[in-house]
Image (tube, rainbow, N blue to C red):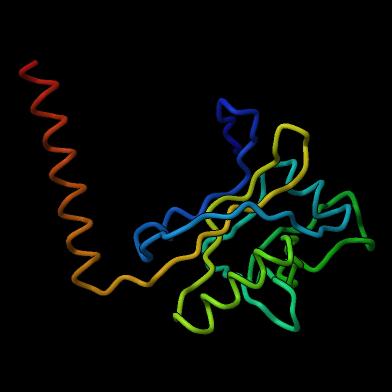
Length: 157
């Protein structure tokens, strides 16, 4: 189910794998263009952004491959669960993101899908660079060492 952080945000979905697969350089908050049944489904805490990515097409930013399941009470007026959804960012940001993706080979990976304090659905997107296999091994090694350090401090301190 959804968690509630301190800053008034209600977390709906999180892409935890993205921090392992990518080196996060910058994060951007974007709005999402949704239909009513998608919002109802999100309020129920149901979404999956694990395999999704953001793409710039025709001068717009789109969220591809994200799953928002159908809202059962809507019946025949439901939405398609895996349809592309338009992301809302300022044109200056869009140009900067598109330039980084095209020129530098960066990726736009969604990190979190949440409702902000005003109740509006937002998506946190990361401008990221893909990690190589040795980088992933180093990350896992560091994480394990920090875990072991905290255990030692807890037991002896």
